Image 1 (tube, helix red, strand yellow):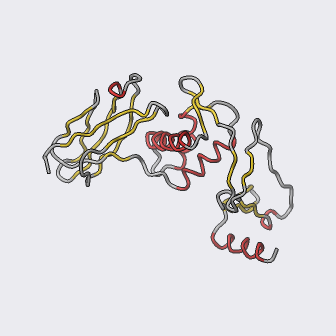
Image 2 (tube, helix red, strand yellow):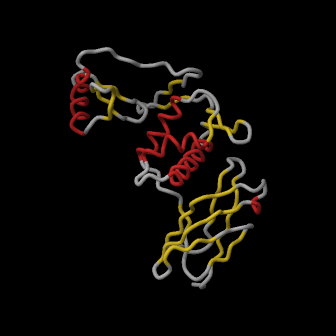
Image 3 (cartoon, one colour):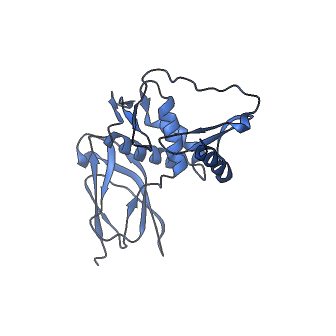
Length: 219
């Protein structure tokens, strides 16, 4: 293998996001931390800094201006932060409560408490990746320069049934009871189970999920 490798950095301007194309085998880890928008053309994109963590190298920062960057000796890979189920739940809750245009920073703020360890840069990267997914699915679209809006969509339940998503204010689903622990709610889209507590709804434990399943089996 050549001691050097070219990493081609280009822009997916339809979604206003950074995309990465790997041009050689990439067994090492190369993590993207931050990207900056400089113009509409791919060659105007810039990676503000990326770090290479490899044996014998330590952490190395590289800057990029233009379309190609010839990396120093080593084998490299650019990867985005891992999106975990709790990140998706936080993003889903944020989108469900949304009424009007939003910015990526708002989504990142909703994801931030669910990063371990806490990292605003990582939350922003996860928000960016999730927004790429949502844009490709047609769930969001651009609204002016920095804002996005939800597109009227339908949700597909686990059964395959489609239900419309309401526009405008989000209706509250409240329940008044003196025995909250006997109540449960099921998200028929994701399968998530919530159980009642004195403090409100909480995610069900495995044992509580089994209790709910037993009740559904006798319905």
